[in-house]
Image (cartoon, one colour):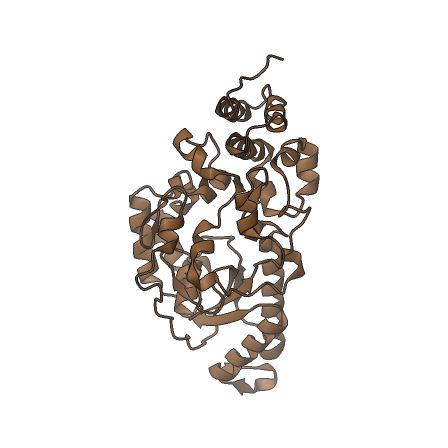
Length: 365
């Protein structure tokens, strides 16, 4: 039982149904409840780290010590945690034809989740509103809101809360929603009965593994981030390894190929959230146009976008690779030559590679 204002009490099932209703009213597409144990997910993470598959993402191992793995210990993140509320919000935009963008070598492909507003702030605000609504109903309780903002094993928690299963591409999958959604959590000291976990429905399918341009899915349920295009274009700070530049194609921020190939995404619902609609026509943008942006343009036009966090030099690095893979013409070569003497050595290196791909060489300043 949960004690409410005035001394009344509400049982766990009643409060859970209230939370589901309030979540829908706040724009979340699903909500689930779990306990604090993520033993299976922790074992997978430790094996993944031991194999070095995290690459330069040192933060993935930063909270693993002799005393334990903080990611697998919600009570370390919030003492007194008893139940976790996990929410799901669809992001698949109405526009943005992925197949058309990938097929046109002169266009830029940006992962569908990054075409609109950065989801972190939006989900955090909505989760806080949900916590406020619970407080208004039952009174003060201890909680903490998370939106990919701390060492939280959110997929493991989402699995345990019945929101889906971990697919062979390592993303959470749901039979009706596919995988085009964001996750967020509220750690609470409330005693809420956990929902029933969902069983795996990937079966013998290997579509995502076969679709990966860089063969980053090295085994079912195992990604080597060092080969993953999302890692290479977002997390990697230095040079993109030359053998992996061609497979990047025109993907300049992230990659959705494993999701595009997944049968469960054929009927994935569109988002109800207008903030996730494409901004600045990024779903239609041409590579040469984006490459012409100066740093001021980058910062201004991508304000509020998750893309901005990679910084301007890596933005140019990624586009230079895409231009190296683009159809060869005077416009593409001219765009690359315009950055051949860029102040950043990182940019210069990738521009030089791209020009060589077109049988050209940088012109001296």
